[in-house]
Image (cartoon, rainbow, N blue to C red; front, side):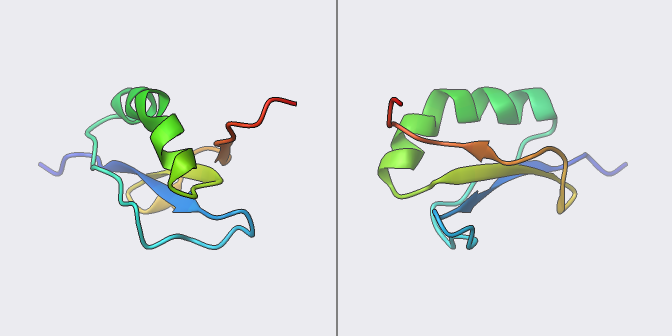
Length: 71
């Protein structure tokens, strides 16, 4: 039995995929989204502008903006 794999792809402000940081692999979308909710501040500080959740390598939802700017 193959376990579903969910992970995040991180992009810079221009939309280019960043090689780092890397995402852990999750067995469900809920855990992936919960992790992003807990770590988005650190990711944004590391230069991540947006994140796309991937399911088995394909985008499963629209990109999520990670901005610390209020505006």
